[in-house]
Image (cartoon, rainbow, N blue to C red):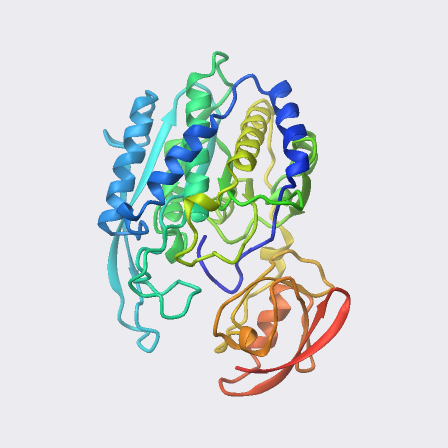
Length: 420
């Protein structure tokens, strides 16, 4: 999941008490079961030091792409285009924050497979497999971490492993589905959704009746609170009820309507394709070298993967999935700003303050004492209601200025003096 001020980083969790009930309810509805050992095998490989953090354009990315291609080949799937599962693309990335004109060329590799059921409808199930490498592109949230391996087990080996397992389930399903499935594993996501933009450019040409896209980004860290965020439910009028109908028994869903979010589903929403985005939340290891495979909740991820299997089946059986533009993109513009508070904002449009889902070390918020879980309500006298008003407030501040920042913490209002 790439780091940007308007990226959704919502905290999502699963209680140990609920896991057994969730597992039982999934077994009743889904005769095909996700194999937890498969998830673990994929994540431990992708997040191993051998792959050096899977930076787009690196040798580690190539090793990951070859592994993913081999997995698709084992399942008897066909490439999206040509004879190989790899789709090449290129883009430029600015590595010097003081030089806006010079960019470095990066060559990326998507890995894309098709389950062709000879149907007249197609669903894309995707995740990104790239991560931060050795912090060469400076996206780490840990200060002075250049040269350290950022393994990205949750972000996003977890989503990649889930897509591989879904590809296995659907390709081995004894009942032929009513849709074709495209299993898309993107690179270049951490630099701005580059790989998914590449696929989205041709998806309606190659598969004109692409009816839906499901994106899984950071689905490996469910914990005690039982909450799962599902974004994009406003992109079609049928989605809210469908998402609730097939949810595992003990999960508490947090629904976000926007089709624009922090990850690859955005590229497809912008092509007028309805989307869903599953996300289990940020954590202290987000974009740090400590996001490792031994911290994944594999039982929780198994539950989510089964949930997506059931959702994808249900979506494939719908006669029509009408597309709806969501209000955020239709009515709001993103203001320009030159300072950063150093937080990961909650993207949900709550109107009563903006949740802080992460605080970056050694940045203004952390230095002032603001914590993950605080709700930001004011910067100076400027009111913050959600992420767009937050960015509007930032746009009025100059570097070096000090302002009081007001937050709610456990229902109590607190004010911190922040130097930007």
